[in-house]
Length: 292
Image (cartoon, rainbow, N blue to C red; front, top):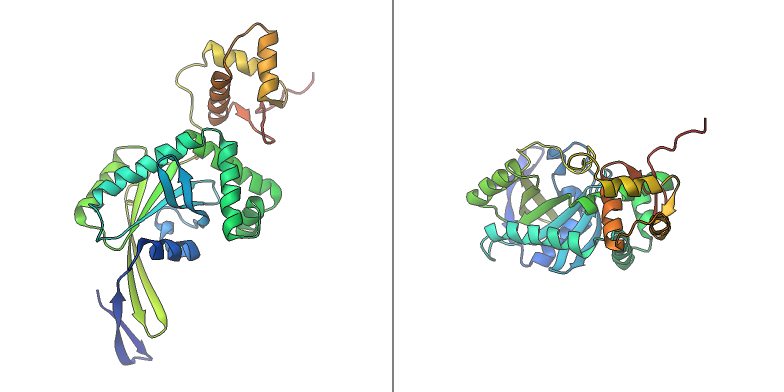
């Protein structure tokens, strides 16, 4: 592609395409300029906030991690054409997604790691960073983080792979995976040009051709009717309670369940919209019945 620049229709000159020397250069550019990603082709008015670079998981560090106003989590990886077969990139980002999900099964540890990551690049704390970026009060900011927690627990991620060139086979693979799975994987081809002191970027998004629901547009329902374990746990919760308080109520009722089982069932109930977490570490009914 040729980029021609002129002043008032005269003195036309060609902008020269520049090569990206290192993946970290591309990573740094996106972290500084997240608006350069054409995410509005996925949904209108998406504003991406990068909260972390080189975010740790058991499988390695994710190049960049971001969120949007709706609490969607973006796993961002950068790859250059000179490196490995790009088809393996999809396997790598899915591995990072699985590792992110497993490493931070306790969403509190995920939020703490985000706090540490934000503090490395910004003087604000996590809630301040989100509040300033989206111009939200503390209640709305808390709601955003709650959606982030739920997306993490459900393994709902948006994967974005940035490359300097995306071949046809990879474009077809992106569409195929998005069409035939619940995954959302997008490839962004980044073409850089230079003219005098200006840098020109032409981003092209692939994978957004497939339109489907993502993240928390609807709460995930539990398969079938609630089993006896779920019913028993939910009956214990008639007001906001911590997990240890719920465990104590279960013991008092003669119900023996492991802490891990209770934690998993509580998370499933939150994802299914049957419990809410009004405060950190607390679980409460969705709606308390009024006194008669």
